[in-house]
Length: 455
Image (cartoon, rainbow, N blue to C red; front, side):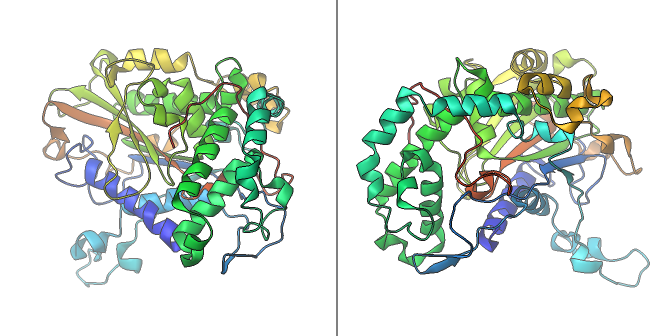
């Protein structure tokens, strides 16, 4: 991840801090610690995977006068780390006295009171990785992906866009062979040019703004088809598994009576697209058919109507709201959208569980069966029953979890009780396959339906 990317993700964490954590926040979570990270209140998870852009040329590469080294990096772990740095910055940045030892020596803690927040890294062989990247290692998903390559939409678009893509074979000569500069690799091509527009001053001489928009359109179209098709549910397995992870994390907040207050999951944009399709967000805005911006976030707010200083005991008093923030620009709003084709942008918690549960993969054993997977954990007896996320930190109360009612997050006519944020990678490069995957072989799926994407 570049320094620019790290700072952008940090700014996203700061945005969430200003909304949900700091004193005076407009939607402050009930009884959340404003300054010091409390282990019982925060849960974060990200795939512990090295990922690369699947290109065939060796690294580093020379591109438009600059040098790029697109080797494997644990971008999703880095993304989660930078987000949490913004959510809970060094204590000395908040107040010098907070970073000073309590023995009266005026000794400042290392790194100005840097707060180390654990992230549960999920390696490929761990069953909990399915909730973050349920499309990885899934044969059923791979089969669905390959069927797209023979679809009429795919073949006709490859043919109709061939002349458009041919003009980029020269600029991309150091990255991929000319025969691969086609709609079949629309995502890779757009991503390279888009990153070039951010990091390389000579970019303007390579591609025009209208051309970049057209590249984005084709990438949107291809990736939407890869990750959602109503008639072929296997293409959305990643979104189904993410839905299961969302339900499990929100249930941890509810079952712990609000001890767990903020959950962070780091994932990739293809899982976002699958989730958008599954939950019919496209009925609310057709732009959900397009690629989300770098480090975009989905948010689920758990709240109750009215002012309260205690967590409701009856789930009938709980409601859920979905919000989306596209990209990292400081002016980008966190906007509420209705789920499941509904008109209202809030839904009762019980209805939410029912609606999302009907679309979700809810256990590791179900994922194994749906994917027809031979992964090692699928053959282990301990994963033949329901298994998934568990926020063990909720039960590791260090004595400081939970604040006084004076610090409760009571704002207006509603009280925020818990938040689940899901952040996409800070760069699209990381969406590619694992380092052992064959070059330019997408582990994703497509759709024969017309996407009608807004660029």
